[in-house]
Length: 570
Figure 1 (cartoon, helix red, strand yellow):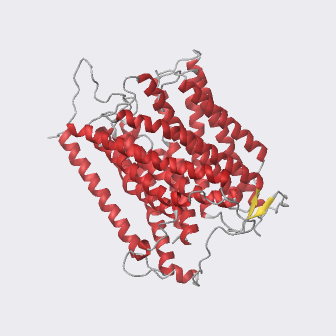
Figure 2 (cartoon, helix red, strand yellow):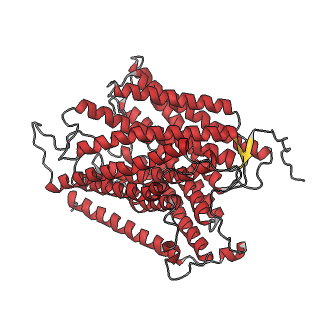
């Protein structure tokens, strides 16, 4: 029987221009939406970053900036979490989705007017929630655990934001389908778009989880229904942690994109990279229960399954990417002639390019710090050592900031010239910005984790409970850890301000790039067949992965020994 195919749809004409760098046809409507969403994301990054700086100076014992005004502290803590974990990240991811479906596929964005409606809903929701928080009517922190009750407008704002984001995700799917029907691309989806498709699929379940969480909370805040705290917590973590899994898939997609555009890297085995993304779809959200391991209402078998088998399969996906991307970079560099020893390919990499340096720093910080601590802290037994201590924000800063945010910053340095057709203002600042920002982050991460290891609690305005009826004492090193994190806050704030400054000034005042002119310095592409490329050895990437496994093993063993000291079993 002859194979039947769907009839080709007649392509619809759209206002566009041809990119001088990629040769792709760029939909002007998509371009404007991408730039608007990305610029809005940077506004919320700035707001959340200011809040983070004030919080860091409060937890710094020698400064204790807001310790005397705890109400203000909890307002800022809530605003920091909402703006950094939701608004900055998701606005930028929407820009990434539009880029992946319209620009990468050489296609038109389906229903751009509806995309503007989605953007409007997201802005209204984000602004509404922020206003309520700063008015002091929603100091419930990011998780907003019941019975903490915020103004109904806080929950309504979050719902509007989630609905807008869900519309944007649906438009992404529609654009991919229409692009295929109109013959805009041949064969399988490009790997970057496939990775963003993974993020979009995870986003659907995550945003529906947000509706499941915040609609009952909204009705409860109006006094129209009762809400069980355990049910709320379970529902919340269907959006709370899965939202970070959207980040993971989007971040890895950007790693592949930046590796290709900076050094010409191509995946060693594209089918294996796609399989790794599929593992994310199937298992990543099942491993999101570790925030609930101390909750008595959830069964032990459910906890064990989620923190072992489901998590292991999700981690397998990350391990594949952890080898594939450095391996692809090494192969590309060795083809260019950097073949001496194990690491000449890495030493000779374009470290002055903020796109490359951001990508590599993001990969290393997420893998060696964020990934390692995430798996260890998510273990059903080890979790009790870290639960609700400062180790948790230390871990979050290594993943959401050290991983996702730095990757997003790096790709911004390319999106501005590619789409806005503006040269970077302060290119020298951009060159050093990833290093300054990540250097400060390392102080924050290890300072917070060090304090958390000594039992210092998270979230509390006064970690030492001064004046409490029962004295709470921590080792003197706890002060040191918080002080190190405070110093890191200052350094990272400088790095963050550098990024915002370069991005904003470039968008508005950057020198115009001539139509049809490439933004990349043309390097001679080595003539090599696909078969020869696959034969290139990548011993350096093998060594890096082996070092990672050693670090992970040592961290795991150290935590198990520590658990044995804290909880002796005879």
